[in-house]
Length: 147
Image (cartoon, rainbow, N blue to C red; front, side, top):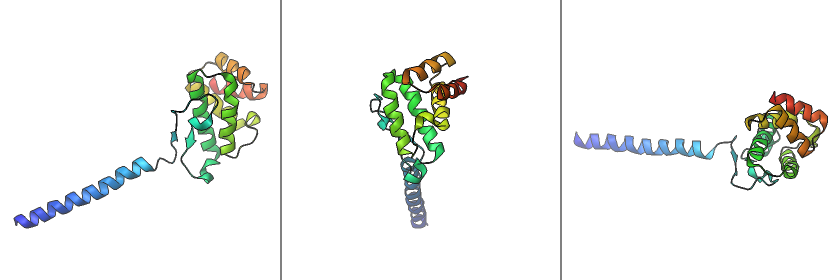
C-alpha cells in the first residue's frame, strides 16, 4: 500500500515537472508578437525594435504598424534627435517590405498611434511631423490620429 502511494506520488510529480516545464518553456520561448531589444540606443536605430516572428508575418501590415508605433513612442519618450527618426523608420519599413514609408497611410496611422501612446497632443504631433520632415499630407493624417 505504501509502495503504491509512493509510486503514484512519484508519477504525479514527474508528470507535473514535465508538463509544467513545457508550459513555462512555451510561454517564455514563443512570444511571436513581442517587441524586444529596447536596451539599444534609439539614436535612429530600428534595432530597438525587432519582431521575433517569421519573415512572412514580418511583412504583415499589422506587425509593421505595431513595430512603427512602438518605435515612434519609444523614440519620442527618449528625447532623441529628430533627425535620427527617419533612418530607424526606414529600417522598420524595409524589414516589413514597405517602401516609401513617408507616403504610406499605414505609417501615418502607426506614427500617430505612437505619438498618442507617448501622450503627445495635436500641437506636439504637428511639431514632431515638421521636425522629422514628414509631408503635409502625412502630417495631417498623423495629427488626426492624436486628436
